[in-house]
Image 1: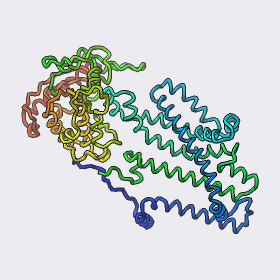
Image 2 (image 1 turned 135 degrees about the horizontal axis):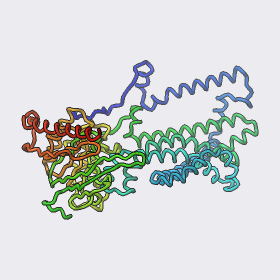
Image 3 (image 1 turned 60 degrees about the horizontal axis):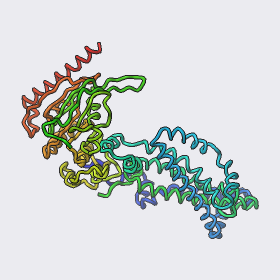
Image 4 (image 1 turned 135 degrees about the vertical axis):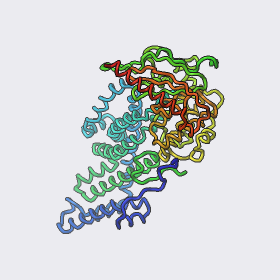
Length: 285
Length: 268
């Protein structure tokens, strides 16, 4: 009766033809195939529609043309993409760091929570697009206002989940540590922070795509670099092919960042219940 | 430490605990007196809500009495905590799921380190003691309930304390596992006979494990009886069917029933 109850092997569900086909594939591929198929279907329909309806290119260009533009001028898009990506990442890191400090303070003191939380909500409800022009006046035309806008938009989800996460801990484990007179610092580092990681990663999943939005919005108002500025310029020239290529590039950045976060999350949260759902195995013993 | 062996290890003197959240006043414990000798295995037995867990938490310094005094080897519970001189096991194992079994047991060695008294518990020895040396690298979610509770016991022992406080540690386990855990705990305890205060509502557990059983009656929690269990040690499974064992069970059963009657009479 005292054997481990949870088998280490990954669980498998379903037994249909598609499932068998997927099971044969490598695990990564298994998850990539269905969405890729749907995406390809959308692309093909779009292509056929533009050809049949003879939609003018300045309204809706065919996806093959957009891809040709993207691939043909990859250096151009990669360069501007790198600028936007850098602003988004810097903004995310800054916003998440401030949010974590705030969440730590608020989780330890109700007074702090009562005084800081309304301020955080104010930041949250203020439309970011309304603040962006102001930031340009304050912080100039360099990367600074874009980073700040990205950090402002990432801040709130991390803060809210951080506070909840730092408070969601096993009472018994806390009592055990209290019974040893563990310091606040020890409790924070050995219990609160690890307990909060599932909440924090959930927030990161929301915040990371938001940070890209923040960077692009910042670029709209003042930039000669970055995909946001590419979109504005292409728009004023009615160059829809370039505009769509920039959008494609942004989607790609978003997907890449989200996938990266998912990989890190899976490694960091190997111990958490949420990981069993995907069939990820736990320890190697 | 001024722990003279003639003095009781734990002294609970006229302790009252009232929970008052403004809207409601609940007297959880009313004038409780108790003393526990060094190396004694004492069980607090009573129905749910009789205040036995509250009393244990007061002894362990996780809550403060409203009035009265508690000493542990001459110190306040808070001082005993600071000396890392008590080890808790709760009803839930409350292990850290991101740590392996080995690292969970090591936790007490990482906390409040300036109170360590030279002798550091050896994690491997403790895992061997609770029979889990092969599972050192496992994570808590790979363990059964009984195994998790044995890890929690090893973790409490790793504190290196002279006092173990066990709060219904087998309460969440199935009946078969519970039974084997009773004897597992006795085997571990026989190794160095620390002082143990054990909370349960199971009469069989109380008789099997204890030197002395303190029965509590509920609301407000009062000591309704103290029963010396004079069964030879080490205790064995076969004893559970012997007349002497059954006599003690019957006695405790009556004490609990009386407590219940007194309670009803008091309320009505």
